[in-house]
Image (tube, rainbow, N blue to C red; front, side, top):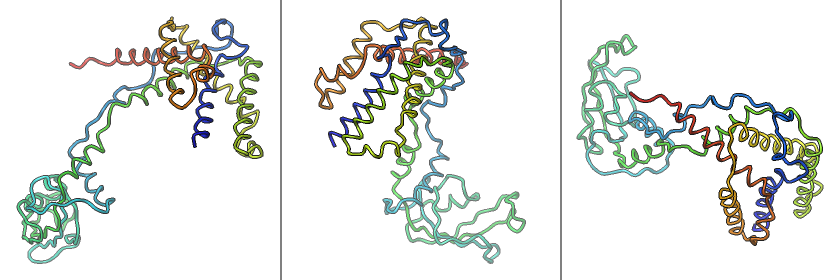
Length: 328
């Protein structure tokens, strides 16, 4: 297991080392002026920060999902007491109008939240104070526009039996499940995707693509050989062509980072670079590598691109925040 993890981690570091590790030095060219990329509108991202904000569910959402929760749960705690408002309960009922049972007015087992307003006026209130096992006649009136001619505006009597009172903690659990936290990671991922879309690579340096693809292919050869799976490489989609496509995706990322950073005058300070290196080394030392091994797994340029990436994303988010309408 440890060997497998080490190989996976090494693969991750290979992705870092492939960026700006070869004959093409992205820091020595002007990507736009030299015809490698075009840069579009990176300042007006079509993203809404509200989509990523923390959100508290409404009571109606909680009540509706609580009933669904019971349907998917094998064992839910109950309490032995009389029913109270906003309790989640299970009941049986038989409804009648003028002493005659009507279609759809009978159930052996129905879950509901008392006070959620999902039943006709008077029905839910009539359950309050009932004890488990008790049967009680409750009078309730169908609204005039209920939708069934034979029931519109009619007064009905329901013989309700309280089967179960569920532990109120169920509602708290459902509320916690529905509550969403601020989704910063997804926001950053989406921001970068939008930023990267604004940069189009129009010229992939052929030697650079080949160099990155060769390095990727050789790594896979090493990995599959160590697993005794050399004969399976091509069947699993590892070909020189697939490695070339991967190399181009790495170049897409690298060129986008440097083109956008240059357009905005964003640079990486020595302190920021040193902090990022320390972060990488600490992570891989924690997985059993020596500091020397960890330091050999990434290039200076790849560290710089990561710092620039983070600063670009942060700057874009700050722009989005500044553009939000001010609440009156």
